[in-house]
Image (cartoon, rainbow, N blue to C red):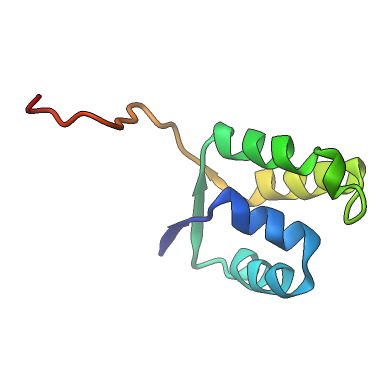
Length: 89
């Protein structure tokens, strides 16, 4: 099975035990391929580095979390992302 996990879910896992346990189960399940591109990892860092998260996690913990994700995630390259107007316009 292939899945994409949203940045919000990763942030929730960083700061909350319930989400962390759920993400951990997915990460440990080798039959699940977790797809991600570089912008996802950048987004996690961008959000988790905000000052308001310091009461939950340190910068070092964020870096360790992202490093562990890099080892587990299957990198993908997004070639085209379309939003807005349909092709017929």
